[in-house]
Image 1 (tube, protein in one colour):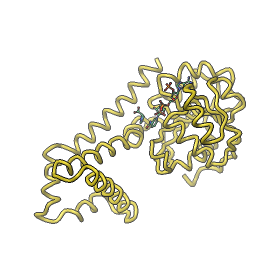
Image 2 (cartoon, rainbow, N blue to C red):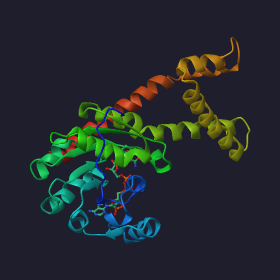
Image 3 (tube, rainbow, N blue to C red):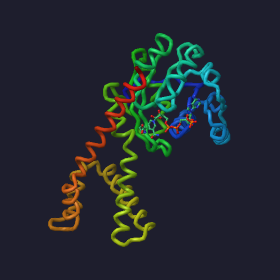
Image 4 (cartoon, helix red, strand yellow):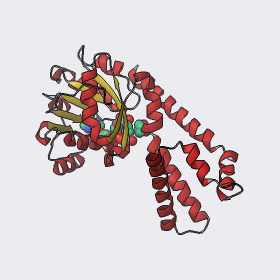
Length: 279
Ligand SMILES: NC(=O)C1=CN([C@@H]2O[C@H](COP(=O)(O)OP(=O)(O)OC[C@H]3O[C@@H](n4cnc5c(N)ncnc54)[C@H](OP(=O)(O)O)[C@@H]3O)[C@@H](O)[C@H]2O)C=CC1
Ligand SMILES: O=C(O)[C@@H]1CCC=N1
């Protein structure tokens, strides 16, 4: 996103929800240069709030309105079903000009705009859990009142999570299905390959070690060669060899069709969340 205008430095962030995704964003925001003293995390599980305060040196609270007061950017990392009530609680306490950045699956910028003061810039972001180790993939879509500068601000805050791309909001359900949910598909496939090793007589530990290293290596090869996955697949597949025999079973069991069906189902669930929670 090198064409984006430079983002003004952010000095204060409120993070609503200190769960899995909240922590990934929190770590990124601090790495983006927001001072720990300028970050307030609202987390209702006291033990979890203490953990985040001790680990990152940020202020924690269980009061949503208290968290957002004075914050230039408000990150909403609550479960989608908790968002409406939270917005109702914070709407009168937002600082003028505050940018609201939501990572909640399914929820549209229009939903936020209806519940927040007129003109509030809203960014809809879909990150994924590899953000926790700086290897995430996120897409950022602007709402009606968000300018390219607001998008640049959100992008800069997320830079330490990994890849950040711009997206149109119409594509966000698809993004959610591919990169948002995608890590779970990959973990399921790693687990399946390891389980296959056990079926073939390898020890569980050795099978998981080999399966994990194989995924890591295959992705590194994709990254470093820049080759299309079809080309790399063909390089593994010797005529009349073992891989061709294995891949025939992928076709016989419709693995590709299953992946497409999984993505369609996840996309549809994202749309359904919007219909269920925004009406
Ligand atoms: N996990 C993922 O892979 C991804 C998640 N997302 C989105 O990120 C959002 C958060 O997901 P995730 O981090 O996994 O969820 P978590 O359940 O791990 O985190 C949400 C946290 O917010 C707390 N919370 C809920 N309501 C309040 C409140 N009113 N005040 C303070 N704290 C509150 C929850 O407490 P409690 O447990 O008590 O409810 C919980 O600790 C979701 O909307 C999801 O769609 C987006 C991309 C990927
Ligand atoms: O499963 C979910 O709904 C969230 C959104 C994308 C990944 N996890």
